[in-house]
Image (cartoon, rainbow, N blue to C red; front, side, top):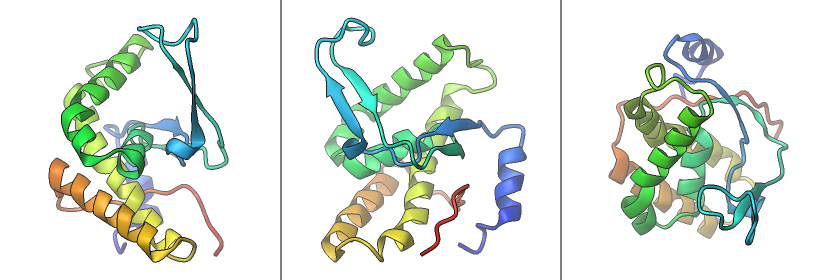
Length: 167
C-alpha cells in the first residue's frame, strides 16, 4: 500500500507503455446475464453476454476487468485450462477493433492479465472486510492466492484506483 500513492498512480497512467481504457470496475458474474440464441452473438452465434451495473466505470488498465472476473468467479481448473485461450481471444478481438498489435503485443496483454486483476483484488480486500462475512473473504483470499501461484508472484503490485470510497 505504501507505493500506492497519487504520484505513483499518475506516473503509471502517464507512462507511454501503459494501456488505458474505460473499464467496468465491478466485473463479476452477478453483473452479467447470458441471452441465449442471439443473432449477433459473436463468432459462433451462441449466447450473447450482457453486462450491467456500470456504477463503478472509470479509467484503468484494460485487463483489470477480465482478471477480476477470473479471480472472483472462475474455478482454478478452468483458468489453468482455458485462461490463455480466453486472453488470446480477447486480444484478437481488440486487434479486430483497431488496437495496434505492435503497441499492445500479446505478451504485454498477458502480463497485464496476470497482474491487473490481482492489483484490483489487493485494493478491494480492505474495503470488503467491512461488508462481507469472513467465509466470503476466505474464499476470495484462496482464489487470489491460487491465481498468484499460477500466474507468478510479481515483485510488486501497484494498486491503481480512480475511485474514492467514503467508508
